[in-house]
Length: 622
Image 1 (cartoon, helix red, strand yellow):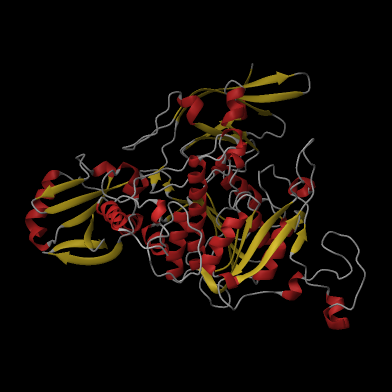
Image 2 (cartoon, one colour):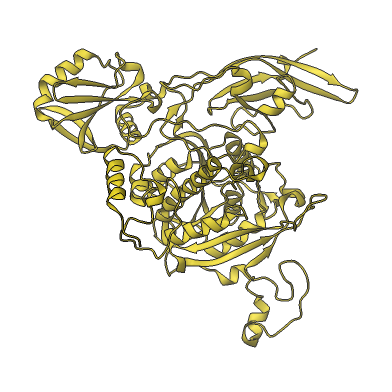
């Protein structure tokens, strides 16, 4: 390691004093102790300890209960929200002993994730030239995934496993990250998933027909159910016959049980499996997940997928008698999964008799339904909810006789009543009573609707009274990280975009004005038409997203259940922004099989929903 000259030392000191980043050129010149022999270094990489401590935990708000959900009994969980914040809350639930497996262990037994593959366009400039900005995007993608891998390791039981599904774009980088997080010796297999499909005409390279799955254990004690994953010895996974041999030391019993699969697997892609096709991008075959879940978990164990997409992990876990938790930040994914779980077939490959799912709950995490529910909550539930929103530790204590309810940053927290008004006069009276008992500051949590002034804090001499408004989106100065709201995709090819949200907010239904009518196309089919005349998001935030053309830029998609049963939204059709825009803001779908009631969900780019329930008679013939 080279020795630093005085000028370099001075520059480093100057950057530190000004709280500015040290240039990359010094990264390998500064001597420091490390536990690792090597590591992947990139811009924006944070300390593991900071990631675990600084990530906001967002409580789960139950939106819909499916089946007989009993209090204090396990139920499967379908969670809409930013998965990093949701994972932090799951880690809290683990700490409370609420993630129990049949063997008594606490935590998740198996994680399977199929994270969004970074696209070529994200990392290349024009004419395939490398671009600095694209490198930053690539580093951000790696850190995005690394943060989640850190939490997933913490969530695993000691005998738990994680399978990470990747392709050629970023698989090699992520392998190094996983070696850092789990330990290089903890990799059990690099599994190759081989599939077939058409090649591009005139291509100038070999056809890409495989992806990789890295399997790591958390410890040296892991689950591997040999007998559950054996395959007939006389066939390979590709279905080609191979010569029979003695196998497994020549034992006849082993021959009758079959062989353990190699680390390359052949399963067709979903587009070639008729019964499984959902029309969802990146959907994986059930056979693939069956092998993983059987190998690395037991019946009743908890299986987690935090990039759940089309819901293959939960569907297969349900069929194999496992508990499941699925998380996704896409509303399309959530409704696709809800539909899938409600319409399961008992056999892998979506065959056989209908399978009634075990009870599950749809939760919102970080984006909550109905801002008015805060005012309607019971006092005890309200205090618990808002303390958790700001990661404050519940702690009942008194200062100068005034009741406090928690601790945040080693300072007292008061949860202000959701039924009174927080005014400057209240702060004046509070300061007169408790001011001399405070070190330098305290926090007051209050719903936005009850705060009667604009400041984020009120200064009284040396004491600062910080106001934490609910929701987080209208706070500007208090928290270290500003509010960032995740965005919904505008087209099918953007469904796996990686947008990391920070904080929490409420759902504010957009303003929507439409015409509903029937239109006859040709002589064969009647079409139902929704003509969107007005679409405008409602934002209550200190930093609202600005749209030049709200209808064109903020409408994310429209989802339709054309035979609504009055209970659960069962999606039949979905239309992204790009196709709606091309069709002059008309949504057209067949009248065939439409019921008496039609449920329509209009979704804006911010994740807000406007729900309409229309009678079939509302669609007048035109």
